[in-house]
Length: 146
Image (cartoon, rainbow, N blue to C red):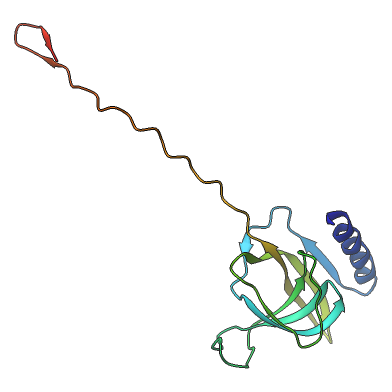
């Protein structure tokens, strides 16, 4: 699965570079994107789509006034036109890079957001209960009393 994604990304990079477009991939992505609800605007392939985030609009509103992003379906799902992508609690929108392209005379840069499963944090084992230690008290004559 990972090899397929890397292979497809490499092909896309080669194709996009020829058209004046390019990707910059982060080696250790750790930024979680603010929006968790997106509207697909344009499909690049089953695994890649340009989408707009919900932004400041209310969740119940049909408006999507957030920023443009390139969504990557890293979990095996596919995108389709006008799809609403709602990232549930067990997944996160992780910024994995940026995509640079030219629109007219302007150069644009948008985040590449991958939808990934949250990693489960290891649960800490409770420390074994210790028996309370008795205090040792030194008396005036130098003897230790328990």
